[in-house]
Length: 130
Image (cartoon, rainbow, N blue to C red; front, side, top):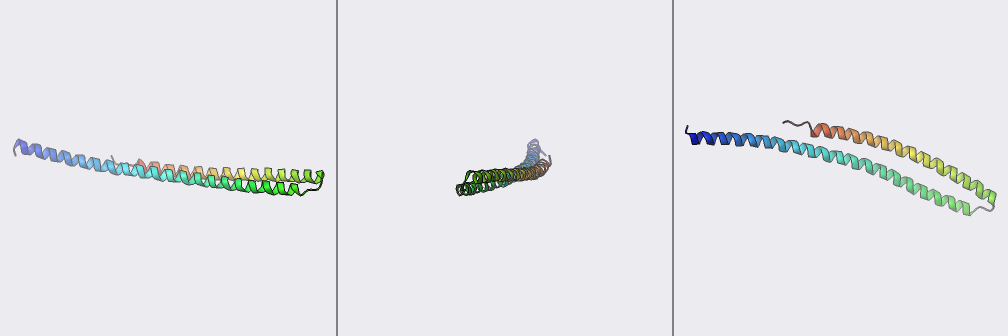
């Protein structure tokens, strides 16, 4: 083999190794990006669930407030008004407490699910072959 032929073979071998290396790196990058996308989807899903719950609570509270005001408007004396206002306030406080508890529970569930999705994304995205 001539020197030129030997150099050609070496260049070809080097190119082949470079292509193999870059093929592996591209595949690893794709895995990492896919895992980030999956994690982001889990975060958005959790955020959406919490936002939906908060909106449902808002709608419920507005409806209850208007119902309470309508009932107060129908009272005939101060004692009845005071009794109904106190009842409405106690019911609102209990409703808000229950809503707060359910949002905290949902947030904990979302954090757990998002944490698990993050763990899976990390293990999938960084379990690469170098």
